[in-house]
Image (cartoon, rainbow, N blue to C red; front, side):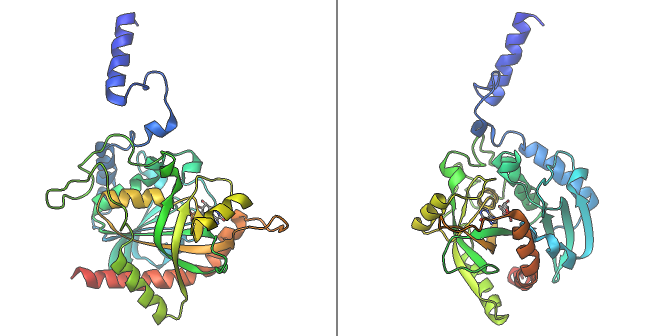
Length: 323
Ligand SMILES: O=P(O)(O)O[C@H]1O[C@H](CO)[C@@H](O)[C@H]1O
């Protein structure tokens, strides 16, 4: 290749991708480049070819919580591996399936397995399926996760309704919306296309939260309500970090959800978040108990029934809301 051709190629790369494209760049800068609107559209078209029905509710299952998909009837299961350009879940307790069907009378799509930044994916790659599900027709997103109990009053097995979150990766400059803001994502609301600076103060829908509280009361399930915080992982927290999170008023800690909710807010989804407290976070130096993922999955699977009951009832209510 001549010097001239080489430099033309480099300039077009730079024009397309920014000044660092030709020489490599800081990983935070590449976040939303791969899953362009066109690529997401291709994935949506691929899925619609297999499942023409429009899902109304999208559900993302956390560690050990994928059993919810077993309750879906008239099911169509698409392994992530069969979908062009779809990542794979690499973590135990996360199957890699997109499950379509009917849950308590409503058409849903359920991610049996999510993606975490510590698996090596950018936050944008972790969260882009939210856009896929929205483009397929979903107007509501339910995110579930396993989390460590930071709040000292929380017990293992508690379910926490997520009132709000602290997105530590984003505070450190790692947000899935970094990069080009494609306003075609999401639906047009009045004159406001998806904005460059999306508000997330009300990302968790207050009406959905109060419906969930009523459902929990009906089933005699004690529901906690608190603030979830995401750290990058994959290490669990140090004792000093847990003590810091406590000072900050955080109730539960995990390594997911926040990037999904960010894209959900950007594309106008109504959202509900539920965290299952799978372990108490260590906060004393003389304690020998450490968090382990095997316990996280074991507790999730053990308590999955309660969580499933709540989601089942909630989804039924979403249907009523829509009419
Ligand atoms: O948030 P989910 O996917 O439920 O998984 C949680 O469990 C894993 C740690 O045990 C981390 O991935 C943490 O985020």
